[in-house]
Image 1 (cartoon, rainbow, N blue to C red):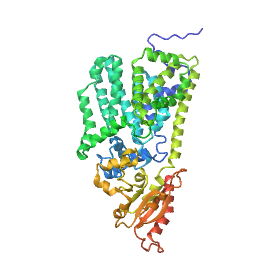
Image 2 (cartoon, helix red, strand yellow; image 1 turned 90 degrees about the vertical axis):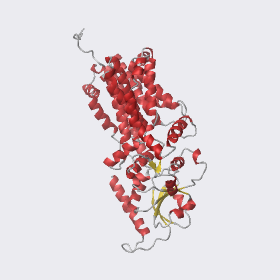
Image 3 (cartoon, rainbow, N blue to C red; image 1 turned 135 degrees about the horizontal axis):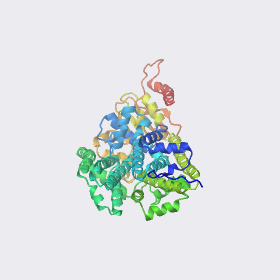
Image 4 (cartoon, rainbow, N blue to C red; image 1 turned 60 degrees about the vertical axis):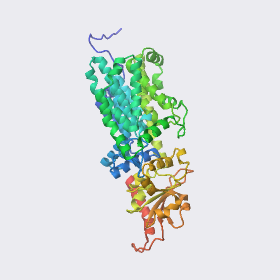
Length: 573
């Protein structure tokens, strides 16, 4: 019998020291180190960042607001079609507008904010697990998180969910690190810097998506310490410098907005926070069990790797929870329960729970590797899970890229950018095209035609309610941009040329004083969807102005369309 003795003082073998193909061990050892992991995480998350147009309505809405902020150079007030838009705080808009200012108005630049949030979540989870659970646990948790389809797609979807998830994850990681560091060293001063950083990131979370940026990390850490009966640690988290830093970062924007727009605080906190959380008159109504089902679904690729140790893992997790494992369970349960209570549920809301789930899955995978009789076979199990999970994420992006082509206004916006002359207004009939201003690079808000006096508008959670809510904070701008059909002649009085955007049936609602000429139709619209059409609109017959061989402006525009489309197509290639 050949027995290898471990010399006194030598480190015990880790799971990654088990026999395995060398390239696998080398890969995991590389991912155990902070800098290579951070670089590889960034490269992976940005792999398909610009592979698709903006998705409607969310990406078009939030990127459009950021574009308006950049164009107006007003970094305080978010606007939607020129009207103050206070559904969400400004951090996403600041990052997105700044990215577009640095790199240009590209789709990939418009998605750098969620990329940053996803990268923050992955790096902070890796660092926390590596420091307090071991290098192998940090690498495994990071791999599981980055490979999850929900996480991968969320990091490339231009809305606020992944940004606030990154802030929440980083805040929890910093606060937990401060607690564990104080316990390990017995020195409160050692925990001062990570604690201050946790307060700062909590403030960024508030600027990312409101009160959940501080409420969720606070609930997780307080319950974690409470269940451990660590009352001294709980008290040690209260920091006067931290509170001052939090206020310095988070409060000024809210104060300025209330000064500029009286009633803002009531609208933002009462209407957009508490009424949305407790109300039932919103879209995306889902059952209470929606998020547990989603998380179970995204965990499916990893279940073969958890098959062997499931009993041992469950026993250790529930009966004798270690500090990190208990933190992960509390983190997961708190976030899932919190977002399961409202009737309205979106996939992105549960993103702050995904890092905790990744930690627990990594815990189970490593436990299985320790117990496995055939470690090489077990390596294949979890690697198949990683590959399958990552492939599903890429497939999800590809599917959204294809389906997004059916609703995107990118082709129309690009054509309009070529044809529109300075001073030409854009008139919108029907649904507001959130992404049009981003693709058109329009300098002025559009004129949106509709029945804005309809008392039923507040009862529907749709684009009209968003616009009407914003109009309350800027009545003068609303008078310019929101008009009834009968008011359109007065609004366009003296205008020689305008551009109408809407469904093909929009011209039937035009007042008789106007002549409309179709210059572009989006033929990529899906079945059952009235395609968006671009019309040249004139209040009087277009005068014959010699251009070339006697073409009038309408003919010039019509002949310019193929060239504009060809130029746009060539640029896209």
